[in-house]
Image 1 (cartoon, rainbow, N blue to C red):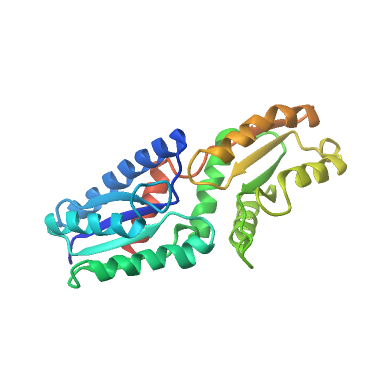
Image 2 (cartoon, rainbow, N blue to C red):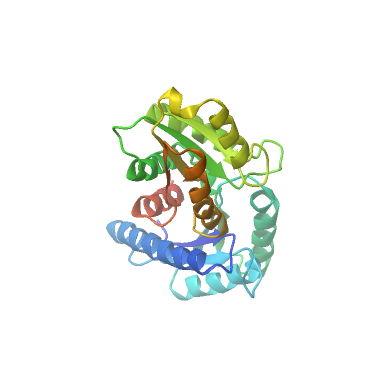
Length: 261
């Protein structure tokens, strides 16, 4: 069995909170990957992150630089794992194209593997979201949850979000509805629907908004800014916002397990 180097690929952002969270996650993944590697008697491994956007170098150059470091440390197998939740243009076109360019620039003896994007792990992600929801919900109060995603305009691009909402409903026994930032139904549409249904009279005492994003940034800030207004709309319901998925030991464990499998 050969030592493997892991390169996480994220979208990239100039937002300070986003970049701090990416750095923290990378450390967590590295700790777990090194622990697994040493358990198998392979010694240390290498873990780093590359950015599709908001980085001075294009992704393929970042991959080549990482490959050089990996070879220097005795690794000739590299796994590239896209940390993207939805199957859009970045997943199907941009990242594969950049990996193909990098593959032509590195030593052909190096195995450069592009793994499926993390969003394919729908059941595992549902479990992580359930734990985020439990952290903000009072289990004794009747609840409804809104799974809030950026959304994709690609045909079928939002099917994973709908599937996760279904899994969440099964796991929690709660009503889980979806809302999107870039495509309908928008969060405002869902809230208007809930208000017209007289949510309070249906017995709901709290509402959990679950951001289906990996890292904090513009979307999570927008949600936080709107909570005050939402509280005025639903005066008798507590509205709570869960934390993003990524910066946690359980998500780091999912990444390492996915790479191993």
